[in-house]
Picture 1 (cartoon, chains in turn purple, green):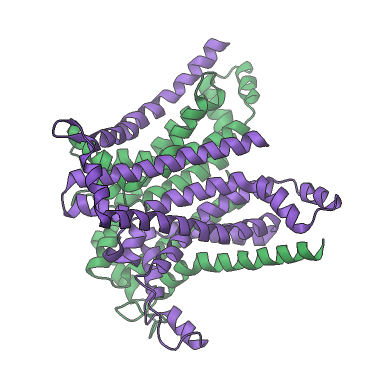
Picture 2 (cartoon, each protein chain N blue to C red):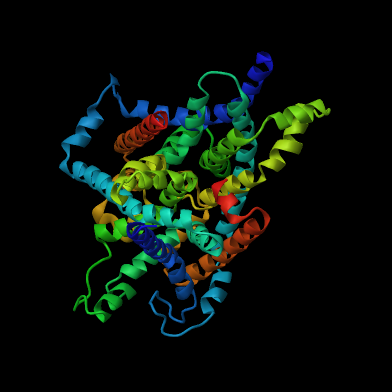
Length: 276
Length: 266
């Protein structure tokens, strides 16, 4: 019996072999290259990176924008996922279509559509002036706020879907039981519903953060070169400056952030799973 | 339901409806702009016309890129479905340590920064002496599509009752036959979902492809961004509207055959 099952394990070899050679090995080589100086191991590239104040600003901006994008996506997604879990029939279909259909519009076009909206003479400003919120056009394009709104828009489905799939499976009798025991609505939400839906929140947030921290097309079209993030710096150093040493170091730093997010969210998910 | 419950539910619905409007906004803008008469992107359009659809039809470079992307997405999704099926069976049924780690590893490319994977592949292929752009792109796109397939197939196979396979084998089917005749038809929704998301991810990938293309092998997102920089006219919006229509047809087909909720949940 165990012999047969062990042979089944061999079925994983093609996929794992492929990923080991065409994914893990290249990334490992990139990391190795970033700590290699002219004579052996060296952290000189990293020291140079962290000594430059501009780089620190780019790093901080990248992390801040990713964090705020994740928060905005969560704030919109959580009530939406909750409403979806109560929706039936045609309404559920409408929700699901609204989540999936935007994925068919390429990110290039989507980001460009946002840049049209945010222009000074764009629709958004006409609306704001029309309802009297502002007298003169507000500068929106090329601002960090515009970037966060656009990014949250693109990544939103990846926050809603994991939360929805967890909330949908929650036993609705649990909050009711808490209510019959005299728990207040706030207590029921913070002590019953929210903790039980946390695995979905962790999965969605990890997704959105890791995508937002490494986004390239969206900031290129909404904020442009003036407010670079790590990805834009990487692309620039490889494609325009031809500075591979700097590019590899930047790539290794972004990779390290992504690995921390993957491991951290995995650890959190395991802890949440164990607690249940 | 108490008043607080009704309030919470009402609030969720308002947020949900706002969220739908927010999500659909870029699509609405793209479609509206595609019917403009003006050569620049202005909203609302000064006059309506189909001229950018006619214009888009003549953009040979753009259509070459569409074909290139469709080709890459189809082949890489197909390869991923085969590799993913085998690996998911191994993880779901195998009896060896580290199966959790294998699953995490196989899904991890989803969360890796695309540009970094692209750079790493570029340097790796160069060192290996692989110069063919199509082959490099294809290998890169399997890395993009495989995690989407693995994620849905793993979830589906963990919920699948494998005693059905044993039953099929008792009835005389070989193991591969039992997989093909029992497992795969039973998991059709997961195949459709995983395949669809993988396909879309490949079609839409910019950051990995940008490092692996050459002048002759340009994928759609790369060509689109180049167009926006060189001659930003609404023909791009017209073409995107065509692709949206295609997606609506695929979704309608999926909804008819397996149901939208099952399709999206896997």
